Image (tube, rainbow over all chains, first blue to last red; front, side, top):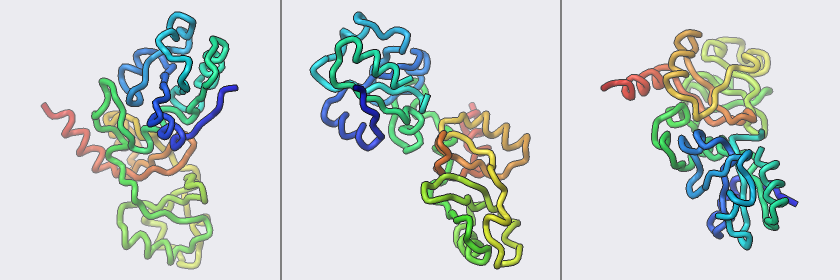
Length: 67
Length: 162
């Protein structure tokens, strides 16, 4: 079951090499994204686009705010 | 959206999935670095002063006055324990009877702005509405700081200059 995390936990997990995925449209990612994040827009999440992610490591998704 | 994306990842076989619900706005609000074409372009969050004096609903004007005199940034945001902005005590309100409270003299529900707002947009809004300060908050209403209309205008003019 996916787990919600706050900023503090996010920073800890990033230091421990978690993977970060921005799921907003690509244009918004291009303008501004969190350091190290990759872009996979929500509508494009599928087996092909997520093949770049390592299933053995934690994955964290984020968007703009509590949407 | 981040929650749905996390569930989608789980459906694709990922077993260690998390979602950062407060999102990019929370990250930017904290003044943390970002990457991308807009990174480094000054916005409202970069102009806002974060160490502003605040007060509580029950604070008396006499106490607020002393606080505002020692830090004449502008108005005094009225916040609760979570730093959620409930109102704004303007500098002219401190002329009131010193025993009155912030709740009695504040402007309730002041207009607030997000830290990633473009300076051009905010400069225009503050000018059009004759507002002296922008109250900058997270999308949940937590106070980030205050940006004076003068500072916003000056910084915007610097950016617009050739």
